[in-house]
Length: 138
Image (tube, rainbow, N blue to C red):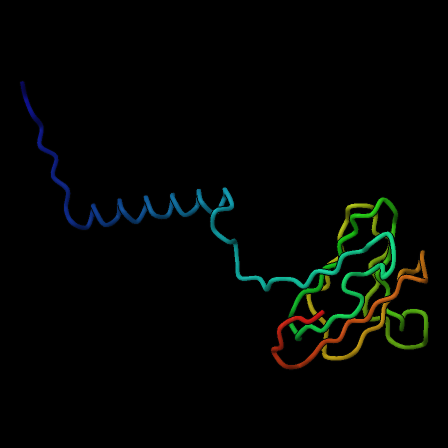
């Protein structure tokens, strides 16, 4: 029986370990085990079938926080900044949101934003964006 002795240099071993790590991390990233990038957690507002319609109806977030409205209802809705109907600047308007859809704003500058549903004008909410890093409030 002939035995062949394989000899690896320290550099070859380092390269092999690096390749294994890259392949393993790529696989974990592809499977969703590792986060893809640094993203801010969003502040969630849920649309409801009954009053108060937006939960929470009034919220405070800090600048840079993404805001997400979820529509789990069986009907279409909009998320429309009140100024879109006035002569003021239209800061956001989701357009028609079908059932089980969501609408996300990456962030807003500091200010107070009253909004409503154009389809159901009784649905109203208020979002306050602060310049300081305050935890989201309901």
